Image 1 (cartoon, protein in one colour):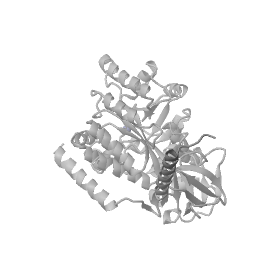
Image 2 (cartoon, protein in one colour):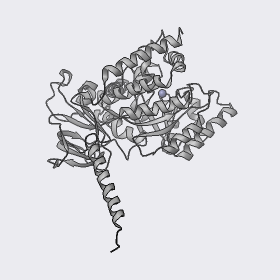
Image 3 (cartoon, helix red, strand yellow):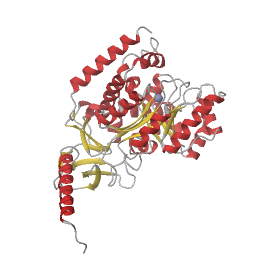
Amino acid sequence: MARVHPMRAIRVWLTCVLLASISAAAGADGGALLVRNGHVLTMDAATGDLPRADILVRDGRIVAVGPDLDAGDARVIDAAGAYVLPGFVDTHSHLYTTTMRGQFRNADGRYFDVAEHLSPVMTPDDVHIAMHLGALELLDGGITSTGDFFDNVRSPAHGEAGLAALEASGIRAVLYYGGPDKSTRQPIDLAHLSALAGARDQAARVRLGLAWRLPRDLDDAGNWAMRDREREVARALGLPVQVHVSVQPGPIFDALIARDLLDPALSLVHATDATPVQLQALEAAGGALSLTPVSEHRVGYGLTRLDDFEGVSRQGLGIDGNALAGCGDMFAAMRLAALTWSGGARDETAVAPRALLELATRRGADALGLGAVTGTLVPGKRADLQVIAPGSLQMAGFGGGDPAALLVYSAAPTDVRTVIVDGRLVKHDGELVGVDLPRVREAARASARALLERAGPR
Ligand SMILES: [Zn+2]
């Protein structure tokens, strides 16, 4: 056996003591948890529902799911009488617009006009306040992952403020880093994006992606050169990419196909106008879809008919900005998608409520490229989950059986009692943990007022 020098042995011992104290400190905020006696909807096809089961979480990961698990040193979260689901996955958002809430007044203020009026006067602090508030609202309603399309990166400081806000909120996110506005004229700051990507772990809770846009004029070769370069950089950095296909929907989708730009790293947003041929091409390329029924209906993109998209394997639901959707409410998104489906099909039996839960969890995670990380409650996944307690009047009167219809048609964000992200308790007993809500609200109000003042009349 090799002899160890005494000083080296002391150093090793000191390192061990230090590591032990770090992990003890983590125990207070991210230590082991046991979610006990819930009705667990694992959303994993092989495991199904477990009407009474525990979930043991260690080091941010689910280590066991089943009845009567030994809690050991884990903090116990009582879920008796409640439903335990994977956290919802919002596949597309614009959280920086959260402080524009109430300003989109339809005929008296179209979304794009108002957003393009207020976005230029946002400082990095305004971005941080809006994105932090938006992410907290998502967490409060059981949404544990978001794909945030950040198309207001007016400077490196704005980009860093957005990342810092998502980090601070505790949410899991892909921050799709975009250009300085919603136009297609400006380039994305690829040097800054590359520097950020180089300094970050793409397996971390908050990851980077590219918020891509295509030329408004699809014959503009100069603009295509800029866009192709952005896509090449994203590919080289291994970043996922999102792109809206709502502007000139048919020609844009056709251009993506003709230029062979569809691939598994790309997800398309707002495909309400897509044709079966276009969707087949997306499916063949392994690309993904993000469907945001509330915002798509609100801005008049058409009806989000889930039965139109049945041929696309990778798809999920999105909020598309809490302000545009009204609020960051995945229950509302599921409900609207379900109602549009049955109403459009003129067939009550067309909709399986569980299909909505699948879109909001497992399928959404897969669409965001996070299928190996989150979206189901099975050992090995990161621990992103929510406990829904049916204590409100609007959930009362349920006598048992499959709870999927109850959750889709009756539940609301206020029914989400506990939320865990990456093994960390972010909402408990109906309250966000460690958040000074009066301060968050006041900062958001002050920032929103200042935006209106600085932007002046439209
Ligand atoms: Zn969008």
